[in-house]
Length: 82
Image 1 (cartoon, rainbow, N blue to C red):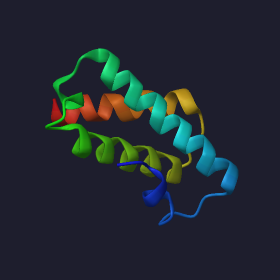
Image 2: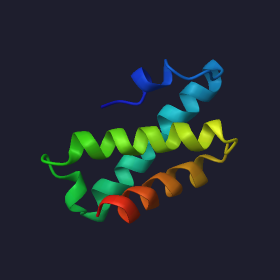
Image 3: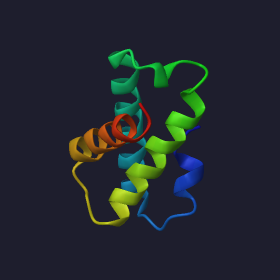
Image 4: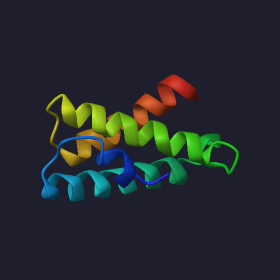
């Protein structure tokens, strides 16, 4: 699940939408490179949705650093679902 449909429900400037989409891609790439079972076809869709929602949540709380957003989302996924 891409992050864009979820971003349509949130109020962000167009530049921030682009940034969050890039953050999502970076976070997902980290999950895939880690070899986590959450990147397997059985979990991929749910894991992507969890990452997307976490990135949006943290951005709504005021976090703007792309690296921090990506790292937080990956850590949240691993902490909560691995």
